[in-house]
Amino acid sequence: MTAPTDLTIAALLVSRVCHDLSAPAGAVGNGIEMLRDDGADGLSDALELLEFSSNETLRRLQYFRLAFGAAGGLGATTPVAELRDAATAYFAERKAALHWPNPGEDNLSQGAAKLALNLILLAADALPRGGTVSVEIGGDRMRVTAVGDRPTISEASRDALRGDVPEGGLTARVVQPFFTGALARAMGGEVGIDEADSRIALAARVAP
Image (cartoon, rainbow, N blue to C red; front, side, top):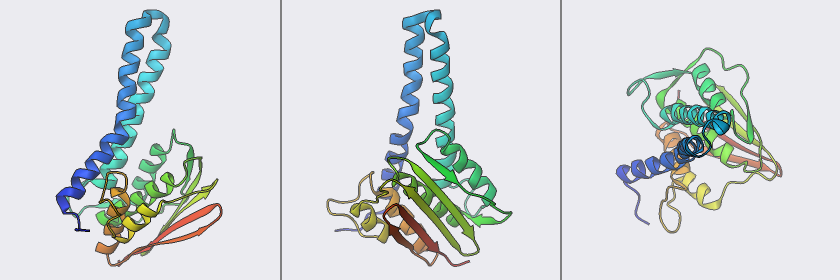
C-alpha cells in the first residue's frame, strides 16, 4: 500500500475534526428551530441546548487546536497544566471520566504536547461504554490508561498506530492513530500497548 502524503494526512485530519464538530454545531440549529416552533414556551429548553452546544463546540475546538494544530506557533512549548485544563474541559460531557492529578510545572515541546493529547483521544475512543482515562506524564515518558467495560482498539487503528496503512487505505476513521504513531516516531519513540480484560495502557517514551 502506498504511503499517504502529508497533504492526504492533513485532509483526513480535517475530516475527522469536522466530523467531531458537526454534532454540537448541528445542535445549535436544533435550538434555533425550537425557538421558531415553540416560541416562549420552549425558550428555556432552547436556551439550555444552545448554551450546551456552544460550550461543547468551544471545548472541542480548544482541544483540537492543541492536539492537531500549531498552537502558539511552530516550535512553541505548552505547560502540562494547560494541556490538563483542555483535556478536563473536553471530558466534561463525555461518558468517560478523566483522571490527571498533579500536572506539575513542566512544559512540553509542541510535538510531545500533541502526542499526549492524541494518546488521550485514543484512550477515550477505546471506552465507548464509559470508564476512566488516567494520564501520567514525567520526564521523557507518558502513559495513558483506559479502564472500563471491555475497552478496545480496532486492528485497523493498531496497524495505523504502527505506521502501517490499513487494508483499504487510510481513512478519516484511522488517521488519528496514524498521526499519533507518526508523532511518536518523529521524536525517536513509539507507542506501546499493554492490555488486560478491563484496561488498555498506551505508553510512549520520547527523546527529551
